[in-house]
Image 1: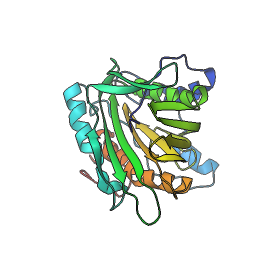
Image 2: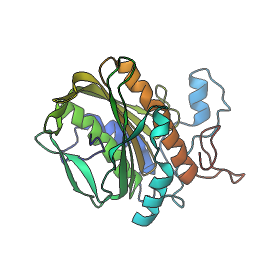
Image 3: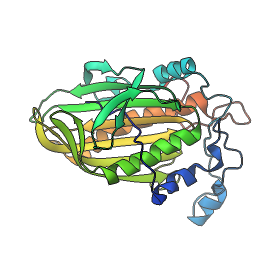
Length: 284
């Protein structure tokens, strides 16, 4: 299934500017976070009764983010996950990878189509996986997507448009005989909910229906940004799987890709080490 994201050419409602506001001054041509209008980490910790000596928030370094399509493609190869992150039974689907020269676009009629990459995207890639039916549960279809935009602002716009899609198109056609229904979405800026690692995190929930696989079955799409990089994971569950099952399948792949992005482009601290999430290392 072509779940790779994602731009629709509609105007963005005022409510969605919360995503862009959270991006703040970091959303310049290089993702430089200098002057970003966010609360000081120690102030935030004190406000909730936490430790005032909280670790610094990772920030994208404009000197480390990809500047060319070739650099972006190399980064994507380093960041994007394989089937092993979805569990021991996950395997490559056919096709395994999307056409790197195109991406999917949600059109005005709420149907997905592929188009050439827009000017604001340096590179993108989606990989497709499946978990075969077993133990009384139907097959599960999955995907992982990494997109490198030219600027942090471009990545923030992609996040805003994802929120708009669920509002404007709660039912979407993936292709003939395959559709998504009952879609809703929510956003968490850094520090909200459980989002402590990405600049912005979005979740979309609903159901997937297929003329061949049946349904409706639980569907989820989770997407996070760090600087100009967007990572996303989709899950279309099968018979016998719950919405919780679908959401849990996305956690490890999404977190792993975000950690790899931070390892690649996060600003280095005074000791010369990347300010990435604790417990990660280069190449994880």
